[in-house]
Length: 118
Image 1 (tube, rainbow, N blue to C red):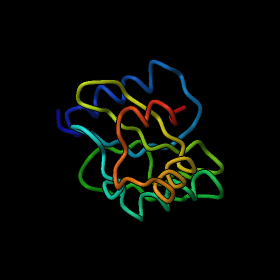
Image 2 (image 1 turned 45 degrees about the vertical axis):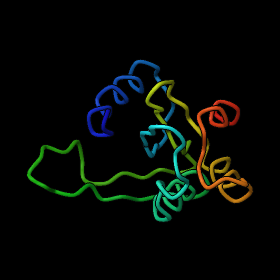
Image 3 (image 1 turned 30 degrees about the horizontal axis):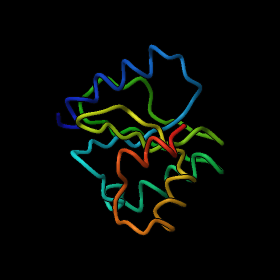
Image 4 (image 1 turned 135 degrees about the vertical axis):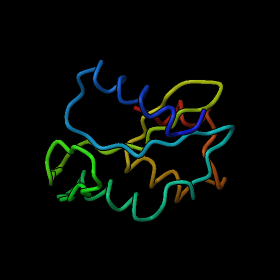
């Protein structure tokens, strides 16, 4: 399933679980997810949302947007990974960065995602 198709399911999951304000980078994986799948600017944005502030302007692209800007201040920040044959795992950005730095692998297996997810 492509990430954009899973996006609606992911959105429903977040709404149904009444979670606190957080931000997520959603990835789909058929097997192990390469650490390079989460780009540096995405990791930095997640880190700033969790440890400081992230201000973002929502692009005016002809859509009806809920508002123009939002601010995330010390919010939860996660890499959310949906593995094709398995579950959905939320990995805190700090855990993701530590795993990426110290892993002997260049990718994250579903087994390891289970161990380090929230």
